[in-house]
Amino acid sequence: MSTGLLEQRANYPHTGYEYGYGSTGNSDADGNGRKEIDCSHLLTKMLTGAGYTIPYKTTRELASDTTHYDFIALNDVQEGDIALWTTRGHTGVVEKMEATRTKGEFFGSQTSTGPKSAKFGAGAYWPMPDKYLRPKAQYRSGAQPAPAPAPAGPAPLMNFQYPFRKADGKQFIDAEEVYKALEGETSGHYLLGNNKFWHGGIHISDKSAPQCVLNEPVRCMADGEVVAYRLNKDYLESTFGDNEKKLKYSSSFCLVRHEYKSAPNPEEGANKCKQNKLTFYSLYMHLLPFARYPLSPAETPKPKVTMKVGDFRAYDTAPAPGVTTASCGQLAIGTKLESSRPPRMANLLMPRVRFYLAA
Image (tube, rainbow, N blue to C red; front, side):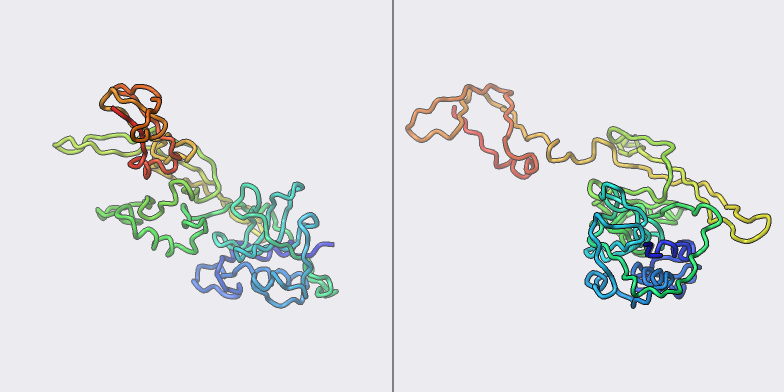
């Protein structure tokens, strides 16, 4: 038996709602035409719309509410059940669960888009939910509201996000939080650069987001496709000024094309079901050259030293005073010695590497 929750999705389009922590979805606080609503309040509205008489619960309270909900095992999860992330304070309604039970999709108020679908599990930002709930049928009235009519056409599917994330992998809450992080940059501000000229982009470097090098890479800002890219092996050089100073730069870039379609026009008339279309591009430039990305521990070579003088005998262990010890061999000038220290500690331990030599 369906919970009736998925039929409520059409009542909460992301074009009319946006995420707002602690917001109930009843007002438009910033006046941008979209009401603010968080994930738990969206769930409550969907439950009410589906005919349930269940009081509002925060995500923390949902995790222990056995009065109004049955807790469902992973193998028994169905479309329309409730997904709950107790450690991340998030919830939504399961739209799809793969037969392997390792990934799926859910509908909820996302911090980056408001009410919209998102993926969870293998290869997705959201991990598998911690718990699954199903509202108890006894709290659903017999006179259920009629299901919301289906949209006149396919709903537009386009996800947006900020081009980088926090060090812990979480999304920025709003643009002000992004600008706060970018205050660490010495140049490349939006909309004007240091020279007071138009600057239609932002600089993201180790000053504002060192996590972007390996842990939290720069993200594409919207769904799209790569139409051109270049990856430099290493920095390029350019001569600058009378003193012929060599300046290093990167011409690595990635150009992405995005195609947006608005929701179908619901009004009767010649334009019914028609959609506005917009093609736009986002450019990610001056990307770090390939050779400048740090090596993983497994790829990091062991430190080596080169003998500058010769005629030394080498030993596996330090010879004890007055004891004759067999030598491993003679070391000539130019002999290279490799440290057996762990690669991840190479830079720190190199000064302390011990070689046992004797003249």
